[in-house]
Image 1: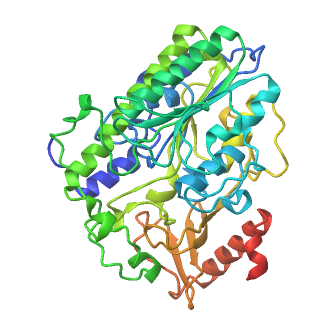
Image 2: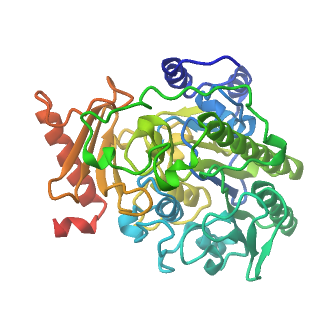
Length: 476
């Protein structure tokens, strides 16, 4: 494959967002709503680690095909504007399980303490006749095995790509030979078969390790994409002019010191990122095929998303944490054949606080008042929701942590993004016009002509924090 220019890469990604195949379009035209299920639906919640919004072909990635991730979106719904409220693995996972912002779960740091008192939607399913399971990366204390699931198969911390140490239920850690995602999928398949034989509905999280940094692909994929030279993004060689110290001094620079120096070969870094995602896609396909084999696909809600986005060279960065688009924007596709029309595209803002109430509503479970998110069900089923959110709150706390990204909070709407770094003696700010500056290069904060917009966005940030019960406000 010949090289693609950096500008062309950015253009292709934007144009292809939400694209649907001809086959999927035809299927959507043939769709007829099925009667509601007579029993509660099964649930499979897939989550990857550090997969950005454009890390699949349904979102226009020009380098590789993800037919099974795409299949969920083509046979269900594809969300073009889904975001996390804290771009860090542990806090985001706690949010996905509770429907609450980090300031309400108490999980603000990676591998932080996830209080047992914060009950997850997955635990609650047992009260409603479900068999439940957690497979993969939990990444918080207390561990997933402490939550009383009917089946647990997971690892501590980040885990290992090759020959991982995994604990099954209350048993000891055991080393499993092979590539981690193949091993996890084997055990999910076994769980689904057994649950289906029992005749009870099942609910499970299957949370991948991939594509967390240090990607090591399965042996069968180690030579994939050798013919591709990946272009660096347009902002790769930035000088950080106009950026606050909080951005310029973040320790996430490719080729920098310490941990960041692991990116020695740009193309191999990019190839491995896409190679491991290819392995994820294959295992998603294995599980989707099993649903077809067992005749339960129509009665199963399937969600595929990521815990946060990821920088792939934008502003010279890798990792996430900052409130920039590559970091906080994530993929989201959802399929439930009985209720969701194939080929549905949702452009409204969806957040990871919405996942829990959405699944709870589909499973016929009451949504606690403490939940911060909203059910996506009306959007999934093509209904108009006049009062849907027009903006959302972002927060990040983990300083100094690994990459010295300063704590920040911000607000994003369809056009503007406002970010407040609040722990310097002199606070720092960013303001971006996403309509005219989608790459977020020109910080407009403090420039003449943007005073009203800045004031409005600052006030919206304060209002959103009040509405969500941010306890930090009382100390400011």
